[in-house]
Image (cartoon, rainbow, N blue to C red; front, side, top):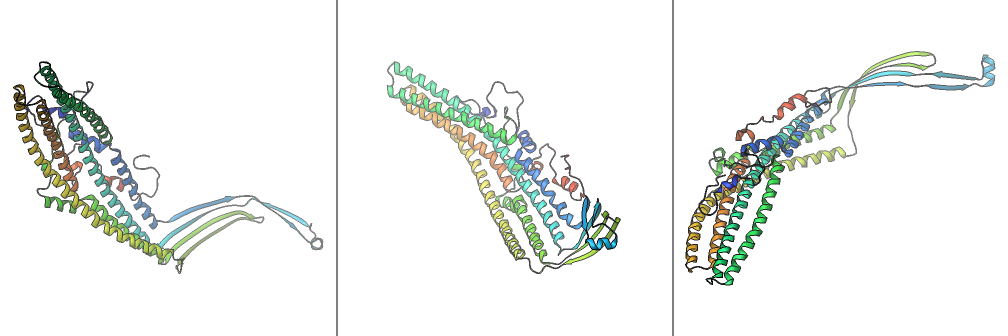
Amino acid sequence: MWLSATRGRVVAFAAMALFVGSSLPAQSQTLEQALVAAYKNNPTLNSQRAATRATDEYVPIALSGYRPQIFGTGYVGAQWSETRLDSGYALQQGTGTTSNTRTTPSGVGVTISQTIYNGLSTANSVRGAESQVRGQRELLRNTEQLVLLDAATAYMNVLQNTALLELQKQNLEALREELRAARDRFSVGEITRTDVAQAEASVANAQSELALAQSNLNTANAVFFQVIGLKPTKLSPGRPIDGLLPKSLQGAVEAGLGQHPAIKSAQFSVDAALSNVKVAEAVLSPTLTLNGQASSDYNSTQNVERQTTASATLNLTVPIYQGGAEFATIRQNKELLSQSRIEVDVNREQVRANVVQYWGALVAAKAAIESAQASVAANEIALRGVREEWRVGQRTTLDVLNAQTALFDARASLVIAQRDRVVASYAVLSASGALNAGKLGLKVATYNPKVHYDQVRDAWFGVRTPGGE
């Protein structure tokens, strides 16, 4: 951040780069280091990476429709039966009237089912899953943009609030000096009690503003740790990234409409929704499956030691009417397809609006810096003049206090404008869809979602993730 030095009783704006505290290490942090830490540590970004890996699994789930399903079965048990014969028949046959049988039947079997045709439901499910994966990658890219923008904003907020706190301390000290001078002049009868009261009121107000500035800095430090995962320690100045931005507003708009991940994610959602319609329609199509079964049964009856059977069948199922739910599902998915197409237009207009908004904020911040710099220079001259006139009785104490406040306000405005200048440059790059670790040239190993996808896409077996879980 361009915190240029100013002359006078307020020390240089280099205080912006300080984090107040006696136990802080001498090594300072840079904005690039903060962005690298956020890229590696931010929980929101890491959560989205995990969601992307989970979405990858939709593809092998859909591909399972091409593969056979195999089930093994087995049973073992005990069976007892009692048979009671008619006494006359038993006498005639020369047997007893009651007979008992006990068997221990058992068996094993295997069943195989292979879908041959299902209305292209599997093919469309795979296409839909692949669209989901690509859409999720764009969501991940968008999350990366937001996290990096949040990190840059948090960094600059700490710098800004550190500088404003330092300015408040120096302003309070300057007002206290004015109060001491007012009391000295009151004691010799040069000014009235009203002048002293005005100085006392200004000091009291400055003390309140100092407490608020300290609270704002504490909040900024907490957000810094939340987003970046580190405690701010003696931050170095941050700089805008104008060299990475499009050359014009129109170029920024075109870049955003052409590459912003929110738009691309919405477009992949349309592809996924179209595949879902085709999957729903496949329920109305015949299903052809090849089924095979083999089994061996032991001791199923008292006189049978083993019985082995095997069969292979080609089954055709033609849906006629299934209660109407299938038709409702098709209509529902068509409406969802229409919604996803509308969402593409919604995201386009949102991106366009964001680019225009942040480009305007960038232009305004540049103008605000020039205005604030001129205001600071003019107010420094004015304060010196008012003080000299006050000493010879041509100005009141209130005039001096007002001049001191005006100078403080000008310097605070300059600090805020310089912070806005840096943040706006990052916001423009984010709105145009190009804020990422590669574009910024961050020295960090970039996360490649395709690596995990390639590891799991054609996996037939295994419950452990590529990460070892």
